[in-house]
Image (tube, rainbow, N blue to C red):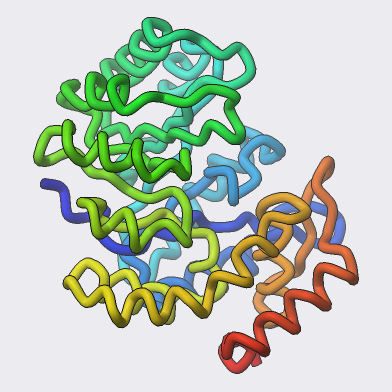
Length: 298
């Protein structure tokens, strides 16, 4: 089994300057911060990286920057997906996969294909991709759920190595864990469900909150992977109240606001997202203080 993607992978944010250009210096600070905090790998240009509003050229620049500024040489997962199969396959020809360890490819959104379409979509991507493929199931955003049956059928493809599972349906995760090949990676796509998913056979999480608290969150996940669920559940309690405040005004609005409080980057996002409201920011501060996280951002 590929153990490069055990533990915490951070779905890294894309920092912006006041004029909404990419802040590469800020990006470097976040990379250093999460690397020092003990994350195991970096997920570049997923939802938390604002991939819908980052241009193709900026994505290339961010990938190249990360390759050249990766202080602990962490594995890189690169977001490559879409709802036009031919465009996704053709677009991979323009990507420099040297130094990329896998891609994360989201289930087709908006056009809502049936099972046969989903199977063919990912089969064509996996056939064409020069690195391993991790599926991304996030029905809240795509409008369709990849069933456990569909995921496990795709798991038979030799170049599809895992799934980022964000259905938030624990029964579905249990079905995947039961029916998947032994070497197929079940990775949580939801921070607060990561510990329960590990308890049924998951190998970690692609995390949003780890942008801000990589060390504390990694310690929790590592404990769960080692079977210390008492410690992991105790640590998870610190994140339960802040988690919904990450998404209340859209992701990554909430986590970027915390990163601004920490002095790492600006909270700027690109429209149609907007910076956190004063009300949200105040409630975040109160929760961080209540749950013992504020000392980590001081």
